[in-house]
Length: 360
Image 1 (spheres, rainbow, N blue to C red):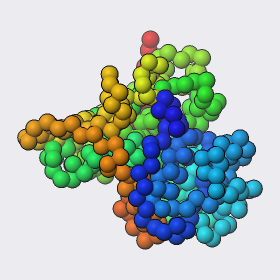
Image 2: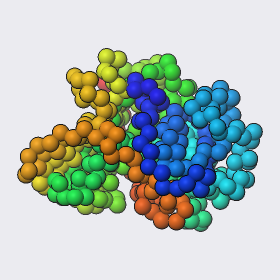
Image 3: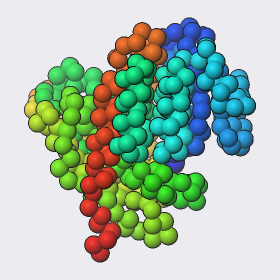
């Protein structure tokens, strides 16, 4: 997928199968966002078998089959939901429709794996929580900027090893290239995509909670704006927020749609993690001013300074863990409480944000 477009970006597979072929069967439904490709590649790399695809748009289905030619095309949604061999359904529907799809999947007795943001309102969140509590099934979320980025996985490993001591602060930048002409109409309608802090911001909330080892946080302040796209009044092209977690650590996130055309990739995503004994910087998708490609992590601690290049060396253990969690009913990939708390905080940040574009 294109490195110039975050909507279709999927890192190269790093296969690490945890099951045999046919042991864990899944399906794809709702192809509205290109992240469905990364979600499916990750599961297949962990040994899962993709059996079905369903979408109402025949063009999207045909494109999907180019990537996954062995997949069967379902004529109706029920063909997938009624198939007893399907253990999990992966979906990247329009953001505001992801919860409804998930509820149908869970009601059919299957686990659900959705693109972020997993839903757009607190009312949807309450319904999702109720479905999970009632059934014991999973509503898993593809927070890809952590689980599908090797620097992010490696940073977690370093923190667990005590490389920087106790984490005090996480700062995350999530710039994206807009590519407005290639975006569907729903992408610019706030009630359908959820706003920038609900959408992109959920990636960064996930990282703040995860790296600080926190289970909750307070949104201290947040801001949104449409600074430069009056032709798309429903678009937030900028958003930021400050959080304080229940471990006492702080987090700051900034996301925007201002990646310039001259940048070599769709966004210079970076995460800075400050600890009591050192710090980490992730340059996830590029190293500015060089042709070094993605996968750069910088560590500074009492032992010195180290530049790690991790592309192809770390992999993406989330997907194998998710498969085993579905089979064993465990929570090693990501707890359900974490997945839901992330989007709860992102929605709170969006809902209480000051709109800076109205103050100019």
